[in-house]
Every structure is written in structure tokens, then in C-alpha cells.
Length: 270
Image (tube, rainbow, N blue to C red; front, top):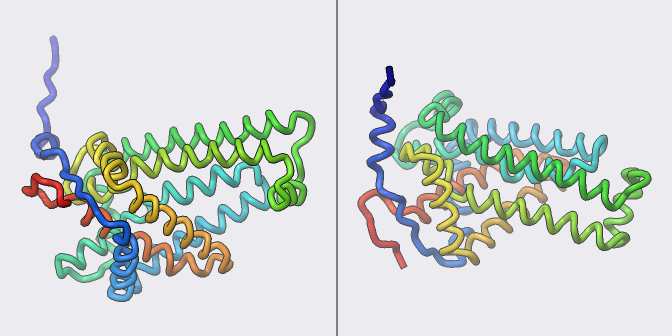
């Protein structure tokens, strides 16, 4: 006898949501997001810096991999940059609470993922698959270009710095860029949208892709800022990550607020 599953209230609410209206923004918008992110950090320093130390721990992991299994470094670094939104959920919640005039408490942000756990899990699975494919592609590229013996760390770095084995470098970094752009495209506003509106994962990813398609230059500037601030954090012996990553996390919430119109606004802002 066939069984019929009755939709839950949350599923009914998600199904009733209209497709998010994506706005056009100016090329200077990412710099305003950074300024607002800094303001959130100053307003919620203790909770924000807690997440900053979490990012620093991730940075130390990347360094460890670089020193002991450097052929995975590009994949792990890509994961750091593009899986970071999951670790930034608490920062999004802090920014949201500040908007609502609520206290900057750390405890409620630690379990904010429960608000839409199923769809966040789907999105996490998508990024995990992409990440694993890139890790495998990274090893395949090394295997193709180093058929006899893998170079040691110092040899690999000397090739990068001196642009030796140029074909390998072009292929390696070009493939990495493709994967990075793919994940960036589906994650621009996905998690904030899922947390804020209980939106389903597929709609959230499509909205992110639309945001990038509608605002390619501003969002490429935004991607460049994220990468630049992250590199700056690494170059400061990871100490900068404690402050810079919370700023980026808070700024991402403000990016979502500007890119996605509030419910009820049906026409994109020009």
C-alpha cells in the first residue's frame, strides 16, 4: 500500500516563497560591504573574534598541508576560500542580529545551521563533491607532468617562482581557477539566503549564479577582495586571519542584503 508523506510546515513555507529578486549593484559596492563588515566586528568583537580564531586554525591546516603534502595545497586552499561560508554562518547571524537590534551573543550563532539544516546539507554536499573532484584533478595534473618522480617542495617552489615547466603551471592554475569560479558562482548569496528565508538549496544556488551573471564586474572585485584579504592574513603568519576573516564574513551578509531584494520587492533595482 502506497504511503503518502505529508509536507511539513517548513517545506510548505519554502515552496510558497517567490524566486529571489536579484538586484544590479555598482562596482564600488564590495568596498562598502567591507566597511560595514568592519563596523559589525567593532560592534560584536568577542563573538566575531571567536570565529576569527576558527579561521586561523583552518589557515594553520593549510600551512601544514603545504609543508607535508604540497601537491594538495591548491585544493586545500580552494577549500579554505570556498568552504569558508559554512564557518561564517555564525558571522552572518551576528550581522542579522545586529540589524534587528538584538545582543551580539555567541551561543545562538553556534547552532544557526539548524534553521535550515536540510538545505544547508544539500549545499554542503554539492561543494564537497566539487572539492573532491578538484583534489583528484590536482593529483592527475601532477601525475601527467611528473611521470617519473614528484618534485620536492623546494623544487616545486623554485619552478613556480622561476616559471619553469610553464605548461604545468598554466594547466594547474587554470583548472584551479575554473573550480574556484564555479564554487564562487553558486555560493555568492546561497547560505545567507537559506538562513534568512529558509530558502531551498537549488533556488539559493540559482539566485547566486544570477547575481554573478547580472553583476560580473562588481562580484569579481568582491572575489578579488576576498582572496587579497585572505592572502594578507596568511602572510601575517595567520594572525591577520583573526580579524580579516570576520570582516569578510560580516561583509558577505551585507553583500546578500544588497544583492537580494527584500520579500515583496518584485522589480530589480537598477
